[in-house]
Image (cartoon, rainbow, N blue to C red; front, side):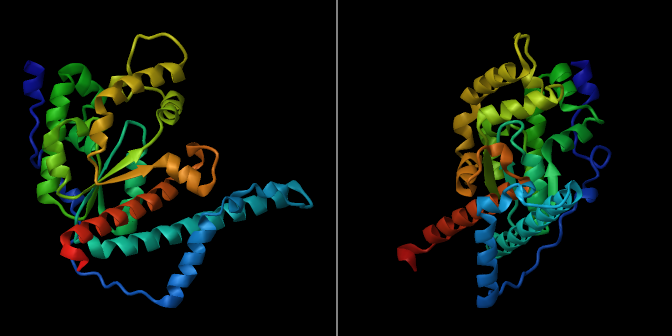
Length: 302
């Protein structure tokens, strides 16, 4: 308990300089649609969804390996450029209906919340926060793994709730990446529902592959004495954690299923998806949620 006292968690200027994370001031955003621009971007979106556009350009008949590499590089650049244009348009479609509301990404560990969250924040012109990072900063740089080891999960969860409370009551126009277990405390949903919560739903098998590739040193809940290969051990632990958390994720405002995106784009595996493609789908699901929300707010469809 003495250690816990030393690391008393206080959100003060000595722990976190919140000025470094100030969000942009609220303001009206002019949103206009032009028929010609709509047609152009719809065509772009359709091209984006065509899997044949991603075929390996090395199959082309080229005079030498250098030319092949050049074609492949140019194809990749065009693909990334197309993705960015679609992403920008999706963000522009959503912004007028957000009214400055923040977004909270939830999902199992390794689901890509931080990576996708940063992309979404950039597209929206929002500020990005990683909840785990805020907690580490507030505890003088103590890592999440060390917090679990020295103070236990319950202490970490209390600090997580304090962080979400601070973010939801103080900031607007932010995208927040939450910890994988943030969903198990009802009070956290109270804070996250002040904005829009987005569940990144990734198959456990895909998560196990990701985690096995990078290791579990930064993921205390995956530390286990179970013997076996890294993938099998990670998958078994994820299944146990899912049994506790799985239903809680369904409280999110919007669900982004990587399996659905993979099927829609005609890919073979969720590992073929880019973070930008996931962010695009997230905006689409947020738009769907906002449309339903707007419909419920208007009696008799008026």
